[in-house]
Image (cartoon, rainbow, N blue to C red):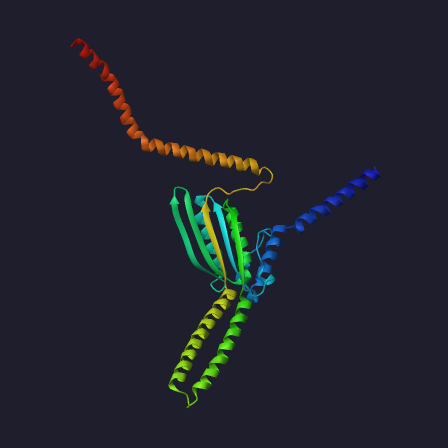
Length: 303
C-alpha cells in the first residue's frame, strides 16, 4: 500500500510540472521565423529603416541573387506568373500595395498594365524601381503572393551589368578628353595662329565638348542603375503548370484532358452557333422539297 501511495504521489507531481510548463511558455516557430526574416531585411536596407520590415524572405528555394555577392553590378529582375484569370487583379493589387508600404524612397511604381484579351484571357504587368538591397526579397514576397492566389512562377530572369567597370572606363575617357581640351585651349590662346588653324582647333574643341557631355550622360545612367533596381512582374491567365514530382503527372494529365475537352466543346458550340441558322433553313427547304416532289409526279402522271 505504501508503494502504491508513493507511486501515485510521484505521478501527480510529474503531471503538475508538465502542465505548468505547457501553460507558462508556448513554442511558436512561425512567429520566430517571421521576426528573424524581417530583421534580416531591415539590416540590409540603408539605415535599417523600419519600413523595410514589410519585406520578408520565407521561401529560401526561390531563385535569386543577393546584391552583396556582386557589388558594383546593376541587376534587373523579371518574373512571369500564370494564375487564374479572376485572381490576376487581386495579385497585382497586392504587389502594388507591398511597394507602397516601403515608401517612395525605397520603391516606386513606374508602370502598370491590365488587359482583357478575351473571355477568361487576361494579361497584366507592373514595373517597379527598388532599393537594390530590397529587390531580391521583394521578388520572393511577390512569388509568395502569387502562390497564395493559386498561381505559379513560370519564368524568372535576373540579368546584371558591371556598372562599376563601365563607370571606371567612362572616367578614363573623361580624363583624357579633359587633358586634350586643356591642350587645345592653350593652343587657342596663341596670338600667332592663322585663321585656318584657329578654325580647325575650335572645331576639335567643339567635338571634345560634345564627347564630354555624352560621357557625363552615360556616367549618370550607370550611377542611376546602381542606385535603383528595376523589377518587373508579368501576369498571364491560365492554370498553373505543375512539375513532375509525386502525383503531379496524374494531375497534369487531368488538367490537359480538361483543357482539351473545354477547347473541343467551345469549338463545337462556336461551329453550331455559326452554322446552325443557315443549316436549319437548308434542312427546312429540303424537307419542303421532298414533301412537294411526289405531288408533282402525280400531277404529271394524270396529265
